[in-house]
Amino acid sequence: LKVQQFARKFSVLCLQEVDGEEAEIKVFLDRSLLGWKCFISASRTRDDLDCPGAGGVASAFNPSFWSQVTHFESSNLLAGRCVSVSISIQNSKINIINIQLG
Image (cartoon, rainbow, N blue to C red; front, side):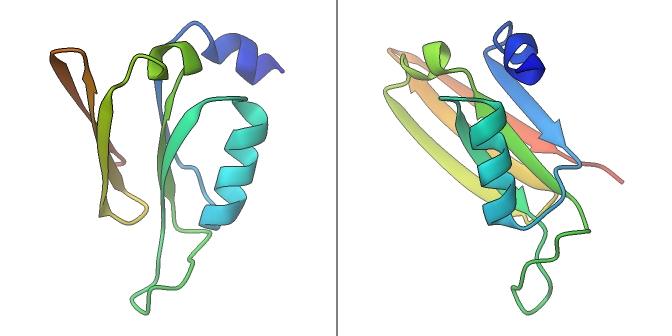
């Protein structure tokens, strides 16, 4: 509940060190940020298997902000390290990139 109270002050949250399997991260964020639209990049091995202890990032969008979005595209640029989201609201386009360095 405290996460939800803190988060509602913001339109977008860029989260880093979101370790875990992608499904686990999704469940956690769905419970912590009710109604938010989340884009997750979990770490993967070279064989494309979950690598839960090696990092992860997530970009989360407040429901009141997301309700204005008319189009979006997301891309997992580097598993566990970088996710980008491009959104359109009316005639404006916003590009957000979430990069975990180090």
